[in-house]
Amino acid sequence: MLQSLRPAVGSFLLLTLLTGIAYPLLVTGISQTLMPAQANGSLIIQAGKPVGSTLIGQSFSDPKYFWGRPSATGPVANNAGASSGSNLGPTNPALLDAIKARVQTLHDADPSNTLPIPVDLVTTSGSGLDPHISPAAAAYQLPRVARLRHLDAKVLSKLIAEHTQGRQFGILGEPRVNVLALNLALDAAR
Image (cartoon, rainbow, N blue to C red):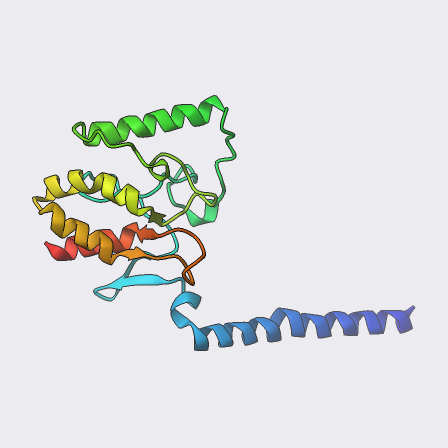
């Protein structure tokens, strides 16, 4: 029995060293060398302190800011530890009620805005943590933010354009605007 136990324990220790220590150290070292910002969470730093990540949505409820996609995490919005989809199907009454409430919130924040509401302002993303909105969602909110901040709409439109990222590699995904980066630039513009 001891003869069959020795190889098993030896294999366990060897695999633990390789897959539990050596491989993670190698991958961490490579990622820290080749792409340190991404390896450390793509944090946005201001005055030496992290204010958020470009990868995780932030909650903005003040009407003078651009709002991101609704979060599917609960009870705390944009909680990366609780990332998941809403798992509500298109005919689920709870989804329809949530969308109606979000539409009402947008109308209450800017009653004079009669533009069609972009779908990404009333639906959650697959992870529930999306940090981006579409350029159309930013444009929809432009009149409200410009009015409340007493900014010229053309200046704000230019700021949105500067923060619009194109398709990845020119073909993947859709153009998008990082809400946190846009709101930080908006604060800096004042």
